[in-house]
Image 1 (cartoon, helix red, strand yellow):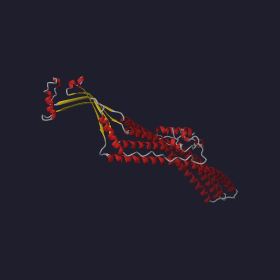
Image 2 (cartoon, helix red, strand yellow; image 1 turned 180 degrees about the horizontal axis):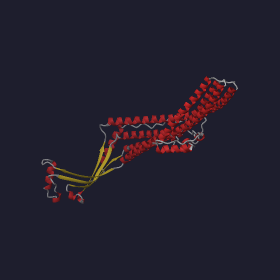
Image 3 (cartoon, helix red, strand yellow; image 1 turned 90 degrees about the vertical axis):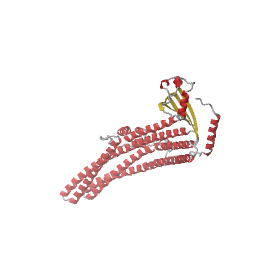
Image 4 (cartoon, one colour; image 1 turned 135 degrees about the vertical axis):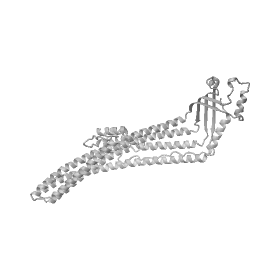
Amino acid sequence: MKIRSNPIYFSLLALSGFTIGCSVPRTTAVKQATALPQQYTAAMTDSLTAAHLTFKDFFGDPYLTALIKKVLEHNIENRIAGEQIKIAAAYLEARKAALLPSVTAGLRGSGTHYGKYTMEGVGNFDTNLSSNIDRDQQIPTAVTPDYWLGLSTSWEIDLWGKLGSLQTAARERFLATRQGKDLLSATLITHTATLYYELVMLDKETAILDKNIELQKKALEIIKIHKEVGRATELAVQQFAAQLANTRATRYAVQQDITATENKLLELTGAYTGTVPRSTSMDIRSMYYLARQGHPRQLLQYRPDIKAAYHELQASHADARAARAAFFPSVNLSATAGLQSFNITRILEPASIASGLIAGLTAPVFQKRQLTAQFKIASTGQEIAFLSYQQTVNKAFQEVKTLLSYIDNNEKIITEKNKEVKALNKGVEVSNDLYLTAYASYLEIIAAQKSKISADMDLLKAERDQAHALIQLYKALGGGAG
């Protein structure tokens, strides 16, 4: 069957498209997010952003980089994200395929008994009496068989871009899913680095406590000797012993923190047992050198959460275009070609070749309220996606600005804490000397030792917080690429 160009058909198509198009709502204009400031701080200069760097560039500790690599390879959550990307890719392929004709192959056989007083029954009986047909063309009337073997195809012509818009939306969401995995990778990197440096700091804390335990044990021995010669009381001995017991208890608590932190790192790597090799000191000078803030606009290029929100915004625009295109008529073509016969012995003969072609035009008539509701949903989705994108950009900018301020102020805290520790170290030495010369009491020794331990821990905490802030800055600037 051949379809000829029919001016009436195409005139109806044009008329229906024009008539419906006059009443179809317009999509909202694409909005632009508020421009980012030129700088984070007044002292900022454009430089190489940390987002250009891989974690191997940013972290100089070989134990840490090896641990991060292991986490990225074996972390279960990261592997799940990889599988989710495959699902998003499959949805995208399905949308691409919707633009192409679908072709199916089939084999069909049926048998029908027509009643004597039906049009088919009378027609078959009358046909068999005709002198114009051969004997092998006569139709069985008791049960009329029908055999078909061939191909069938259908195709919706995307005149208004509905299918193309749906494909665009699927592609943007696929890209958003990939950015989601990048964000997860960045989170895993920073979380691993944070726990690793926490472990290093706990080791240093243990060393500080061990050193103080030794000093307190010596002080306890001295005070016991002084008691024997009448220079100290039992109260002094018990207070020194209580201080030593308190420090030892703190040491056990720190040891538990070490075990818990190691287990968290093992969980990240997907392992049940093992140890976490680590350095004995923490060198964050490379992080200071490499964590340059750069220009705020670089956030739009490197932050995975911003890029994911942008792709979701683009997908919402495509959804709105597809919802608008649904108001217009759809054109469908379907065709069949194959072998058809009521005589199975003749089905493979050239005379059994059969084909058909159908073109259809369908336009929504009574679905306008439903289509309008769907369009409103898509338009509202556009606004939500835009606001989410704007919120993500604003949050990212404020996060970086806060971290930069924190790093600057915490550096000043570290400087002052170093002065405090130096002064208290000297104070412990002086209090011991004064006690031996009877110019200070044992209570002053205990107070000096407590102050020293507290200052040592505060300095350690400030250094740990500085490392954590630098790690978070690396992620906030969009770093975290493997």
